[in-house]
Image 1 (cartoon, helix red, strand yellow):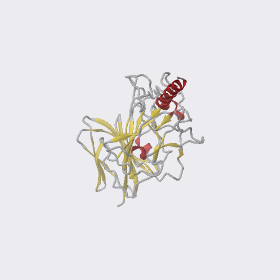
Image 2 (cartoon, helix red, strand yellow):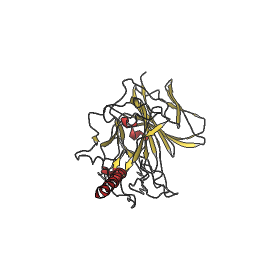
Image 3 (spheres, one colour):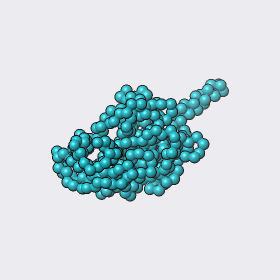
Image 4 (cartoon, helix red, strand yellow):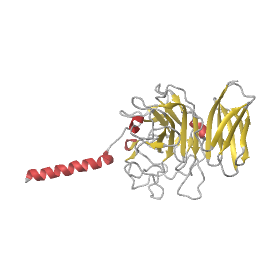
Length: 335
């Protein structure tokens, strides 16, 4: 009888262990601590950075119907290595990054995402998705074991050991890495030809009206609300660790800016909008200096023209935005 009871108790304990693993598990700790997966921006393992960026900005406070959109930075600041500034996505906002070459699956980590957290525990988190065609995206399965009964306030703390597969796990200048091998069985994804990386701000509210969930249906609790211009995930950069050997330029990756081309010294493009809107156009050189800036009313169906006949040979960055969308394209001139 005692042996039978011992067996039943052991079985119950085993089952409890299985079903509570997601609750008691711990993941990699903060940057600088043994066991961390954080990668410094100056690491030699980074061989490339995102070269084009498109963002859709969310509100500063999604729980407030009168809230304005986040306004810190623009999509050009997510291009290149960390240190070019950040673009804040706002609550639920998103950014799509593309690259000169496809990211491919290699041994270990394949790319890393940089946020600008000022400490090891003030963490604003983001979902991460990847695509092989710019249309169908697959999400890394996220885990958040942070308690979800007390709301973390605007300047509260998140312990990185409770976070996995969410961007923003580490402080500024340290990238959160991702391994494409985890997605090897996804039917609509070629893990050796990743053309786009998407980061979606996690709305850190534990209110069921706004909250986001991890793969175990835990509410993801992070600082909320953050009713500031820099609300939400602050994207700094995406670094590439493994890339395809053939140079592949992704041409059409946004539904906002279409038919981008350079003809006879003019940049020409269309905007996919059904209403008249004020657009801002900027061109930067690689030092970050603004060499063109204008604002004008865009009418649906109109072709945009920018005269660049006086520009010298080199690489430039075009940014086009309206009140809630921003798209950045890198282009080169070689007359």
